[in-house]
Amino acid sequence: MTSRADYFVTGTDTNVGKTLVSAALIHGLARNGLKVAGMKPVAAGAELRDGKLWNEDVALLSGEANVTLPTHLIAPFLFKEAAAPHVAAALEDQQINPDTIFTAFEHIRAQTEAVIVEGAGGFCVPLTPQTDLADIAARLQLDVILVVGLRLGCLNHAFLTAEAIAARGLRLAGWVVNQIDPAMPHQAANIEALRERLSAPCLGSLPWMSVPSAALAADKLDFSPLLHWPK
Image (cartoon, rainbow, N blue to C red; front, side, top):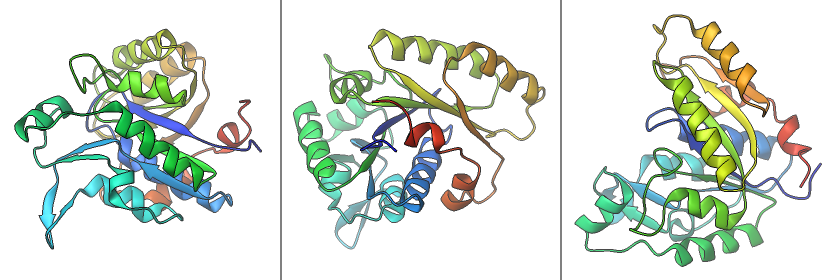
């Protein structure tokens, strides 16, 4: 087993199941005996609850972790508007400072053996005029896990994302298929095309879930490539 299991989770698009997969990874790594926590550097779509900002994705990640952390570390930038990060920040007259994200990550890393960092939207979503989420993953030097939401267009999105990951000098550690559209035809053929063209291992295929469950999703994932991946 590696000394650490830190990964950056990205997706072929928004609403493809990144949070479900991230929560499942946290659940499974904890089940494998690691001290693990999740992080979502930028989360949009928060609401006030008991005077504090609450976000569903952040709550799911923290709920699966076995290390308790304050929200300002899990989600250094938390915005009300459900919009692209730079848009949500501008609406609240804020700026996303990457250094704040890096500092929070190091605080989490010091308290854990594994950190699952979930992106927002796709891999290259802008945060500032000069920085995007791919820059964050590159600065943290994290291996990447790609969530492929099975729907029309996902093959092109998956292959372009894999190229973008490689272009940033990062390694694609694995990919997860998520059946977000149960009515999509030719699913098996699409999965086979992914297997043929993506060099990283498939970590699992998640079935359609009317009620998503991190525990059930974790049962569908193969954690052995993540626990033994050479660092």
